[in-house]
Image 1 (cartoon, rainbow, N blue to C red):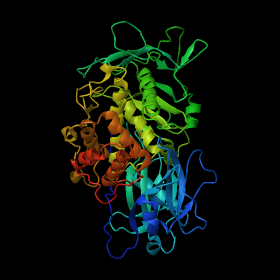
Image 2: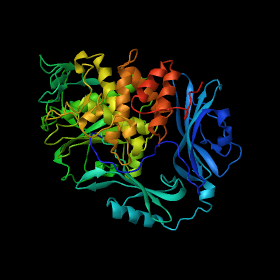
Image 3: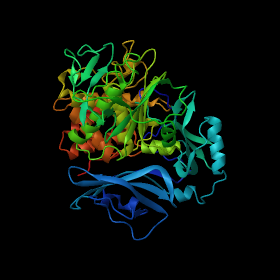
Image 4: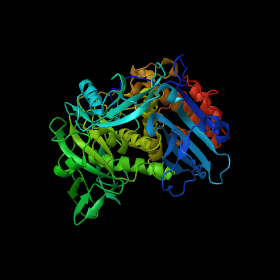
Length: 569
């Protein structure tokens, strides 16, 4: 998400346990043999079928009240399997507690990393809840009215201040106040009704087609605002043709990765359905992939069926077709990620008037919202100060939120929320660098601003190299405080990424590689700044990179791995 408001709490590292409560959040990090004392209290539970190609640790022969249940995993280019296991206590999930087993194909030097909550039984001797599910729904609705189609899960939650484990309800649903979409999440004490935590979980950021793209103005000194896909006319900077489908004289904005829907510049308040869009609404309102009459050899879309230019954007449809597809290709081709997102087609919604934002909603986001529908990216037309959010930066940013939800599932709140936002900001520059290799004019390699390209008032939204320049962001973890907006706490990791990218022997591509590895293999949902840095350092070491440079970059922004998670191997 390019703009947004997210409230409340932070998980900030290892707990100092006050007297009177037993449960503690423990760091798991090292060779499995070194973690035996902690892991011996947990039974390992596998799925009935093991995903092809994964090497997993052996399942337990007996089941205890504390279990680690397989969620998902993948095998990396080093033939190491990374398998994620969520913690359960008496078959109730322990919120954001997860470990990752790292198992080489030959089965040597097996390691495990993550966070677990131990001694829950002493804080919760009986799994009783005085409040019903309906009570929890009522509390949430009073706080933030929204859809009646609410998702409620019973969880174990370790309270931030008292560090006591309690029974709780995790309540989430889609809300649309004045048609502005949000995804409220509440953690509510199942016995007292206290709202323990609240945040908005909505993450807000065959090649034959031809046409215009970009903007009617230019804020970038190194390239014009308008460019073209294929060749529409001479004298305009040119990118590749668009990946679309042609059938019987009609071009369709659809391919195996996504379909693009044109909402015809309707005001967000006049849409007869809510965002994100359900499968039922998509069917009832015939929200089919954008199409236009076309023929060989040009297959040109020059006006989005008379919906463009709009608010300074030449063709929002063409832009997202190209940039979102290139973002997907980047993970596959450049970073060798076999499945950067779930194998379900994305839907990209464009041409929404009076919507000065963009957001991503992954399969997990759709489930949490209680909406039955596909994963989607939504791009508004901008507003008085901004043109449509369909530029290279926003496209790469929002797609990266779907990638994060496919791997670490970083909670969009507190320090993990800042890392989530930062990773999407990093992905914007990784995409620019990826395209620069083929189109040197697309990025000068020196412009570290975010949002300048779409700004009609020539003002960047954020600065990777100097985050405080926007007036709100921080660039040192020691300036972090509970409740800081995730778009502003992102400055800590953004600055670290910038420092690493410009370090001798490093580059944007190389820095993003270790950040992506950490997202895929080491970060867990509730990762703090310090623990996330440990994962990046470990990723650099695994690849044989100079990991001391990573340590230095993080130390310069007040982030220290220290002895909390020493290097493995």
